[in-house]
Length: 201
Image (cartoon, rainbow, N blue to C red):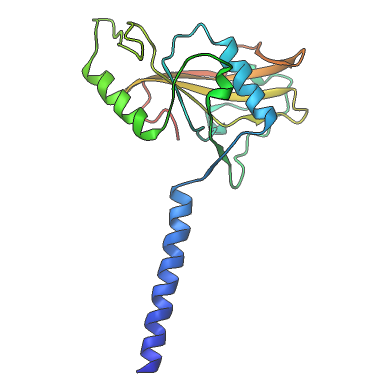
């Protein structure tokens, strides 16, 4: 009887540990970006400030290296590792990367609510949407990927996605170069996507 009780307790303990392990895989934790990463995000958003997005997602998403061909023109002469790291880290973003621009930073629940509302409130035949400020043609929610640096840390790969509805999105993978202490997009896009089923992994 005692042996049976020990077996049951051990089984419950192992099941609990297994559940915790699965939970940690399914729900990654988000750390603040490093100062270098924050500068890349901030410089990118500053350069793209004329793009009228109404919100910024408060978390990054995995950068999928498989999206880029090894001989892609955007990578010519650069040394990037296109192998996925064994345990990629995700990061949280806050208003500091916006450098004073009055754009709300939204979490996952807020994002879902915004996209559902946009699905129901299309305001023009060409797909214009009412955004945060109530103006038409606000493109939606900007979401940013993790950053991949080249070996010299003078170039960085970044993917952005603009979410304009539950099934409405556009995105691109870009190479940024450190130019006079600022990160700038100076090469043609590695790829462009429109209305993908899963724009973020």
